[in-house]
Image (cartoon, rainbow, N blue to C red; front, side, top):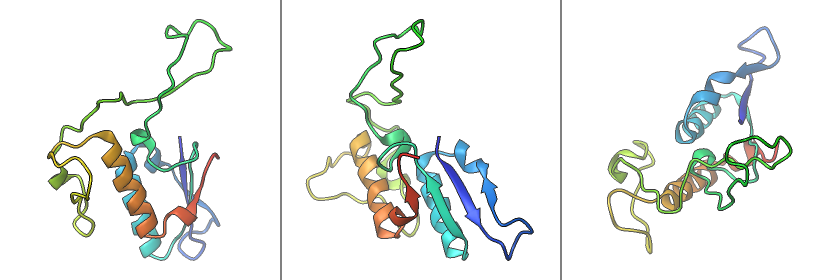
Amino acid sequence: MDKLLVFAPTLHPYPYLSVTAFDLIKCESRKYGQRELQREGHRVVVFEKVDKVGGTWLYNTQVETDLLGIYPNQKIVHSNLYRSLRVNLPRQVMGFLDYPFTKKEGCDPRHFLGHEEVFWFLEDFAWDFGLMELIQFEH
């Protein structure tokens, strides 16, 4: 699970303040929190376990061969998604006030979007607000 560290020596007696509450928050909120902490003047570093942003919304085509977990040396594949997954909220409530979840050219026009479009939204958000440079991937 990725961690968020806030470096705020002027606001706290310790040089590093670890904010672990972000571990429990969905990826979309975590990206928003990262941006807001940065706007408040904190130096933010995010440690991402894999090589891309997206967290829950990063689809993995691999499946485990040991579904019961009885062979300890088998590779564990973790994914919360299946190929045809669609969200249960309309796109109009998925974004932020200052960064709405708008329809893009060539994307699915339906209100309840697929996981790919959520992933693309999160990736665009991270790039548009300069958050990619704050993320240490595969950490």
